[in-house]
Image (cartoon, rainbow over the protein chains, first blue to last red):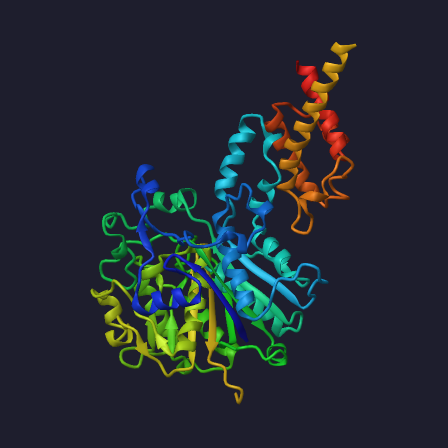
Length: 421
Length: 97
């Protein structure tokens, strides 16, 4: 059961702002002056706006000193918000909660801090690094920080699988509860912002270069004029809980996870470090249905990975073949990346929060910047199934998938919770 | 004797000033449940003030910056209490004069 949600996204921090931004299509993509100064080809990106956020709510004064890990900040905001949203608090003088664990992923942590540490080390000043360097740059810094805040006594770890990270974390937490090893898991992922994270992608020439003066138009999933993904950052978090635990404390249940699947294409049969093996993608989607005990035709809507690269039509083809549906028979499908960009390791968790909000609010949020639908996509899916404004939604099941570098895939089946099923 | 007396007085003022400077540094690393008022000459950093041992490293770096001195590993090992710290700081400052 999903009983808590938290989000720190480029187009909104907190559930109500994020929900509203998705529903009316408010973009969080902006021109970033620093990227222009550093000669980036792509000078637009998605970055959560922390201006009105009181970090003292999340960090104590010692932790705030020399804090230079943006992903850690986003992760603590979404993670602690989700925990609070689920109705829990942060008591510090208690025993560890042995039945609560954390799986919170990231791609890399504290790059700004690491950069400064490198300068000190190279200049022979290793003794001047201070204690924060390890705490902020270890990959598991986010799960370690959250673990202390919650007093989590079950498994506390960080997973990493590129852009699949967030979706994978959710399924790992789900598995842990399903196998009876924990009652509650805080799951999610976060990703740093800034030139050191985004630079490598800019160098690979897979980011859009022609929208520097027009940032909100830059991220164009499923569009004929899609020119690459817009790099993003942020964090999403969910509190997962066994049905017994949720009912026992009379928690609000947003939705349930019916099941899911994680796999890899082995970088074979068309798969590579950067491209997916379509057989593996389809297998992942079908296995997710099987694991959930549903028929592919039971899926009412899809929240795709759909990053706005030339690979979008292939993803649509894979959904169509995996589910055996096309044309008017295809489900509603959308991508939130048009307004948040591709938040990399954080993408799966931010978009999963949005997916659950669609079930809660009974709406399918719009796709933006795909007025010029890609012809290969239009040949597979009826264009009315790719909504460009919010649509009322009476369905109960949404599939959420993420695919990542390394040819790795994850697909989660979310369902509206009704006590009689 | 008057000369000696004056020297003693200057030293006392120095110590008081340094104690205040050190207190300002230390209080930044106090856990939320320890109050600034609990800092005294006899306070043990980890046992009485409950300062995380990792943060003691940060206290030392701040002390170096504040007093413009360099502390060796042995100095750090000897800094158990506020009084120890002041003695070591005093020694460093005098040796550089």
